[in-house]
Length: 407
Ligand SMILES: [Zn+2]
Image (cartoon, rainbow, N blue to C red; front, side, top):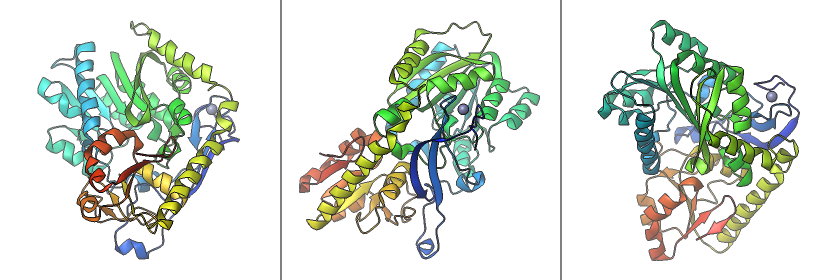
């Protein structure tokens, strides 16, 4: 097995989360009686370029099928983040009616919608039909395809080039990252700018965020490695923002190698931080397994004690993160009564493998659980505020990562 970027042989294991179902394969009542498919979930690190990557390709189209139930517009803090970004970029790049903005993985138009009142031309690229359809209803033209050099050449033939080319939480999700970045180069206007946001591997390791590892997520990225990949395709990162989204992300700004834009200090600063942590050294990656095991044991210990004391535990947030955590820990529906999710598409379904029923928030009010386990810990402030009424019956919140906390 070889590195997806530099082709070196992959030997060093970063973490083995053993067998997991595809994390977004929510089950219907009927499917509970049918067999489920599990896939190995092992992550390696390349000792040459330090790209952290999963080893198994799962059939790509079966993960992103049309039932893929993630809608970006269900998180209010995320929408606020997007709105700010649009304001910032419009000013920074002097975008106007002549400008073309393209977003890869545009989802339901959660971000491009904010360019519309400014009369800036937008184009969404979104392979999942049901989310793209919602964007189209908002007035955002969409191409329902995966992005790569094939689509990039088709856009080039139609003379569509991006002044601003956006990809949020997509770079880590593409199986062929080199082909994807090559495609970016093709559709980028002469002095155009690419911005890509992705969870920062430095944060993942520091805060033991192993639950952000799932099959749809092929790579775990540092600026160090992404810089090398972009460089190999004639692109240059000239600026980096640190963001609080998804437990700590970075936004990179890139342009053509020969662009007039100067490389800013922020790039060197983040790179220095990574090198100081040792991200260009195998030692950095070796101890991750033990840190993750501690989280598993602490959560299981908590759930067992709660059960022995006759307490009821519910969970909040039926997202991929929660599935990775619960399945790695081996938690099933006999330990957690139900999981609440705001997305009506997921309600009345069941989490894969654990078979925990997904319900609306009203079930918390009806059943008054003693504990609510917050699975998307990155949204813990928003969720604890929204559900603060559980304190009325002395309910408490449980946050499993970076270490078990009961509040
Ligand atoms: Zn490599």
